Each structure stands twice: as structure tokens, then as C-alpha cells.
Figure (tube, rainbow, N blue to C red):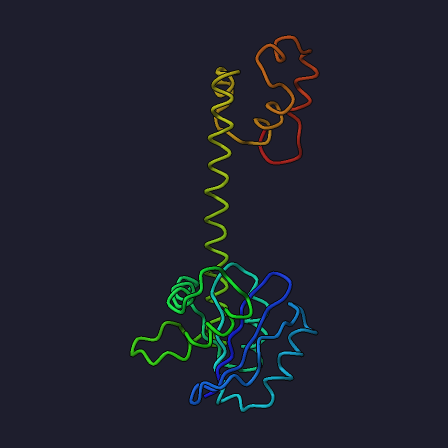
Length: 210
């Protein structure tokens, strides 16, 4: 079997190719860009081997691997996704302390070449990519909601300090009018000293309801 380890970066990736049976490094760590031109450069190297003999490994981290993963799956390569903690542990066991992209591509080859009964990776197939993508988007949506709650709590803390009456003026928080008025009038004093026609402008918007 031929092992291909790819260390993922934002703008460019590093790959190495190793023969699992002999441990020989068939291609030393090399860079390729995170775009179609770079992907074609990688495929040119991989075309030397049969697809059935190749196992490509990369870390399942962040989102920078998405484009490359989908590209490889679409042209029917076998791709193994690895938990980053597994790569990190393997690096430390080999005596590495800090992350090194060229060496990490070889470490990924070591991980996917493991002879353990329980493999330290999972194979991703083209028909499972949509589910995988949905999982990542769901996780991202959850993270955004948590971040939004943090900012809402900070906002309410400020309102409680400088304008404690504000929430009692509305049936619900964070609506269009609520936010319009809050942006325009940051204190009870500003509302009290403003003309009613000025205040009314912030209640006008296109939408359903009154």
C-alpha cells in the first residue's frame, strides 16, 4: 500500500508519499497551493500509482481541508480523516515537540499506516461527504449561537447599568424596533429629551405587524 500524508494549511498544504511495506519515502515533503492548480499538481504525483493502492490521510480540523477533501472524493480517491490529537500524540512519541508541517505530513503517513486492530482514523466516502458537510455546518451554527448569547449577555449587563427601564418598554428583546431605539438612544435621558417625531422614526420599518 502507498500512503499519502497531507498536512493542511490555510493557503497551502504539504504532502509526503511513503511505501507502507518498506517504509521508503517515495516523495519527500512538498508544498502545493490550496486551489485547483495546486490540486492538479498533487494529482500529477498521485497518478504514478493505482488508486486502489493509495490511502490518503489528512487531519479533520477546521475547514481548510474541505475543498481538497471534496476534490479527492469526487475523483474516487480513498481518504482517511484523523483526529488532530492522534497526530499530536504520535509526533510527541516520535520525539517532536513543536509542529513542523513537512515532518507532520510524514507523521500522518505513520498514523494511517498503523497496524493497530482499531484504526486511528476513519475512511470518508463520496456518498457520506454531504452528511459530513452538514455535520460541520451544524457545529458552526451551534458555535455562532453560543457566541451570539455571549454578546447578548454583555449587552444586557450594560443596559442594566445605564438604562434599567429599557427592557420594560418592549414585549420582547432584540426585535427591529428594540435595536433601532437602543442604537439611537443609549439612555433614558436621551429619550426623555427627544422630540416624539424623532423617536417615531425608529418605529418605522417595512415588515409584518404594527
